[in-house]
Length: 266
Length: 266
Image 1 (cartoon, each protein chain N blue to C red):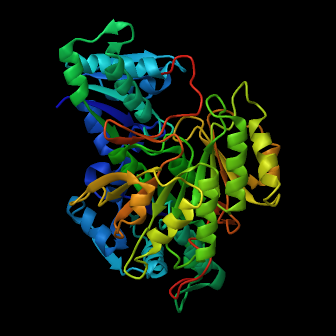
Image 2: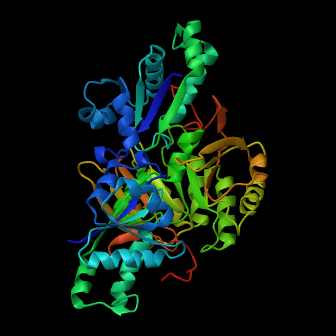
């Protein structure tokens, strides 16, 4: 059976890839990805063919990967963090399904042989370390208890829906991780999100931010929710909001593992 | 500066560890963990000293690791999945802080030298692949959009709090991952959780379960929420509940990356 791989490469450093991800890329002929991520892995996988497409051309990227798979090439699509968390894994399924349904690859008609290959094609997802995990490790241990991951990007999600999720997570005392907290066009989104959280959470709620996780220029900061509201972050930042039990211990952000102590505990 | 490591080993297979996790364990003298997880890694790290403590003796396990660190040993505590997601990272901070505050290791008084070492001790968390990521990769791509991870264990969390989180996540249309969905004493907890979700979500909401992720006996199934309600799972199972957009594509559970299509999209 033919396979196409969707591989999470983690936050960026080679060492943060899993052994399975490395071995998968090593056995492929072609590595497809967004330019920035291809640049991160390129030097470690020599002799491969690399293909890139720009941001917002993710469906084309999947099409490219699938077209090469149909030609018998071993292809891996890379995704930063975990391919399955805001990553390319889902779109690969959707594009493959659409190709088969329409019998076309873009404008080109598929041959019967290609349709058969595509029908049997196994999309294998290789998970990677998502920013919630890698950022948490830098801050200390903010995600030891229940939490939600919410993206502030409203490119494909109505802002009202994002607002409702923030409200809800705050009311349920979930830890919160914010992905895509800012961009050039959305410079005030983190501030808007904090204002929603502040309707439920106290201004001194412990929060943390991590920028450029596992890459050059990595930095982190622990701060209160009201300080976070007045902090400008960039698109390479991941934001953590603690639950009601989260505290600062040894200059790190730590969430206890529950609300009751068990016998052996502290 | 002295260091103690808390290392997430991922779902269980050696290949699912990150290179950083492997290198960290390789350079340590002592590996501490729960018996089951020590058994998973033991053969790959020969010549190390291994220490284990039983389940529910997690604070003792941290104490053990810290005591060996104070004696100048290079120590790694291992945690399955990600050490920072329901893992040992938080407790390591808490136990170290308590030791320093009380000036004691268990009943034994710390020397001034030990207090100095402990004060400067760097707790380094090495993230691993959590079950949300590894389970999602097996099911397809269920977590491409916002989601919450909620543990059904009420050992240290009031059940009312868990209920409120389930309700909230369902109302906000978050994908949901349930950790610890069942145990001998809590055989009906998944059923109770599904009943709460069914107050908000339709019975045909797409769900998935994965058992023994990355280990012998791995199996998965895609089913509806009402089928899930009537399914008995064990403590080695991770449960996924889709959002309103989640669908079955190519026999896999796939959540689209948003609620609107962008230009290049499908």
